[in-house]
Amino acid sequence: MCAGSTLIIRESCESAGTRPSRDKMLLRAVAATRFAGTLRPGARRPPRLLRAQSSRASARPGEENIKPLDGIKVLDLTRVLAGPFASMILGDLGAEIIKVERPGYGQTGPMSQSPGYDSIASAVSGMMHITGPEDGEPVRPGVAMTDLATGLYTHGAIMAALLWRAKTGRGLHIDCNLLSSQVACLTHIAANYLNAGKEAKRWGTAHESIVPYQGFKTQDGYLIVAAGNNKQFARVCKVLNLSHLSDDPKYKTNTLRVQNRKELLQILSQRFSEKRTSEWLGKFEGTGVPCGPINNIQQVFSDAQVAHNDLIMKMEHPTAGKVVIPGPAVRFSDFKINKPTPPPLTGQHTAQVLREMLGYKDDDIEQLLKAGTVCQNKQPLILSGVAASQSQAQRRTRAQGDTPREGCQSVARHPQQGSNPRPTPQQAPAKPTAPLHKIMTVFH
Image (cartoon, rainbow, N blue to C red; front, side):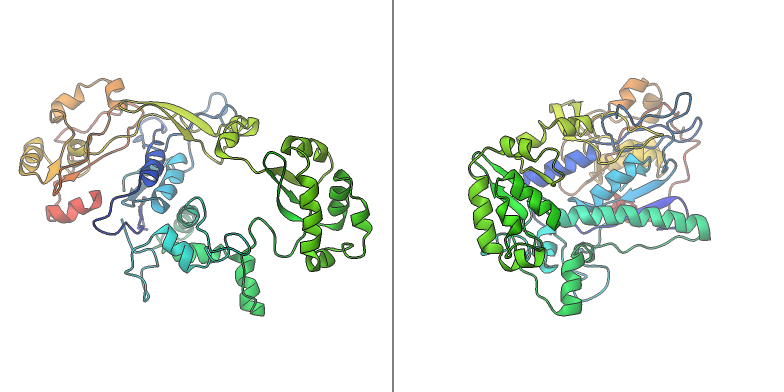
């Protein structure tokens, strides 16, 4: 990260010649969907990641909606999920996201030039080894946990670097990679091996050192019970009408329950299978025993608490129509996150970025377009004079175009809320002297 107010985020990209899966494209679309925002009067208004407006996370009456990262620019050329996920969070906090890619194993070392994928890092880091049924094969987690963890670590590292800069006046270079992020998440698994030489194994939904602490099949589904101490175990036995088990010498302590795990779980599993999930949850209500249903995705988004936490957002996309996406995990007391608006599509703002950020004149932009060096969306070139006369509403709803032609560059910029005047050609910065291909690599 440089010493100014521009951050550079780098992340590994997919191998050359491969196409992203539909799921990954949707994940990127979710991340790209959340940009917008406002700043104090007279300041440049940064785009930020769009979320549904929280009913409770609103600014105080009479105060502006000032966010922690207002005025911070993020140069993000990442792909897939880890980098964009970090940028998404930074954008939620007010940063302007503009878009750099490095290998997924760190920037030095024997694997530094290997392509970084969530599934590979999950395997190499040991996460896949400890995931899956006890007697089964290793299992890849259902979501890209390594990518997501890396994004969260990156977000936290950037926030720390900003504080470092405020205290020292110096910037930092951050190396946050997939492998390191996932190995760091091994926590007690890593500690058990490093200190006691204990190799980890797969436990399915169970806990290796606490019993009962796992999922159970019911008459119509599954639930999970986490009895973390002897008192909670006694309450489980009472709910199941198996109170004699809590007094059984074989199960009096957790150590004994772990030793006699198989026999105890057979008894508990049989009893749980006799009633429906909702019946058991009702019986556990008020007992102080942690438990809950193992929901499918439909059940997740039908949950009243999920709706209450504003975790479902809706927006209208100009080509896809109504789009529903997950909301933010965190809400804040003194500022709100904006309602979602459509993300820009590829090539929509090529001319705007070349003109306003790199200082190119309209004639130069036209020549680049004709030569195929850059691409513009399927619309007439928006020259500076024409753009200045566009309505504020038009500026807010600019949409991206189709995928650019092979061999040319295109620029997509997230929409900005507000109507700060665009700089005229006289106000634009001097045209950079660096070769065009070096400048344009930031838009790959």
